[in-house]
Length: 190
Image (tube, rainbow, N blue to C red; front, top):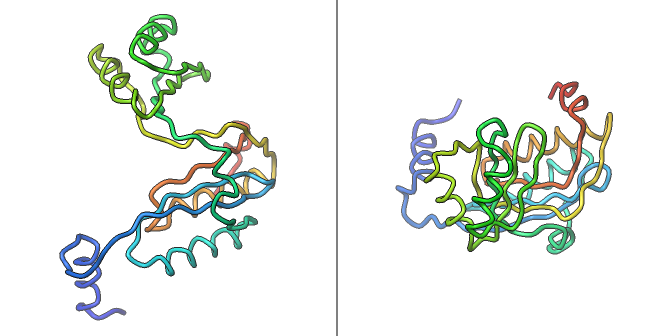
């Protein structure tokens, strides 16, 4: 129900073919159910549209869009590399990543989380690649300093908010400091 010209312009705009369109990066912060801290990284050509969509998601799913800096102090920018724990022994991985500048290695059940500073991310990742160790993900991330435990209805509400924020076109990354049990995650039906 939309004219073909509008569709064509939207595609050109999205691929950068239209002149005069400039994209801007910005961040939003807010609170989810149970006081969970939420941070967003966005990229948009229309900040007003993006803030309206983000605010709508927070309002609809029991959250609140906050002011700049309201939760940012709870997160630190770090490298995060996640490796399946059956791919390498913990001690061997520990030696490898610490020799190459990693800050920490955490065993999280079926995975290991390698945490690095931003400047040491590439050397640590390259060392892992050189040893042909498969990794699940490797990214610069916002890592929370504290976690908020959620259960039941609040947990499901937070998962819904997180999912809807990730689905927004202009949202590039979503980070939050919730801790939800595997049982609550499995019982969530989006």
